[in-house]
Length: 359
Image (cartoon, rainbow, N blue to C red):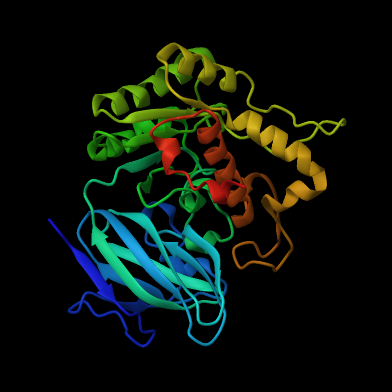
């Protein structure tokens, strides 16, 4: 079924169900991750209106014309649950640029927000393209789409879209506090199973919560590998491409400035399973270790959720979180994932990476 929009956005055009599109501002930010009801404009400070478009389930190509005839512009674009798609795109006065990306819609609305220091969008074109494959993400709080009330708390899955071209869409099923086991037992992998198609990708990153001594906990070389095997089997059943991603390290330094491995044998267990099953493996543990050690103990705070008291509504007393990421940190971890896919030559996914953004 073909479906599309093409129009010039008008900030004064309020969303109306009868016309099926328009701008809207919610009464407050969403606080509940499982409701998945945040709008992209909620992820700016202050909040800005979001452009809502009623569309059927599917993957869409979005093409934006940015620029102004008489002034410079700088535009950042987010979609859905605060997913970054274009970051600080600059144009000179009288110059226009066209940018495209793919969006996965599962809730009946395609949502966009245009922020930045001087944003200006001249035209929005949206077209449903069923042939666009989807990257499905399974993981924990370090990957998930955080609700807008938690901003700037950010999962790398929210930021990954800035590094891929318009030939692939992203569906993020990751959820805070989940392990490779609890993601399965709660039926979350079943949800992915229902939506995977031939030619799609399933990127899997777990370990942080597998390490815990609770019902979701697993053992590295037995139950952890057994649950990861289920993700591999689900992907292959549909003719999709499974990719295993080692967990990034936490921000804990040894006295000599090296990163402490808090994940024990889980990294090696995933590596061995990937080798045995001949599944692509992204060693995000090694990539994050090198990156955090290059930054050092002080500079690495900007990657993690270290904030001052009163800096953000979500964190009135401030934060010194050495596991989760700021928005800046989410971008940097997503960059490492993309670099890992490129360096491991994981095809055909690697051909969809935007090389310029990886520099």
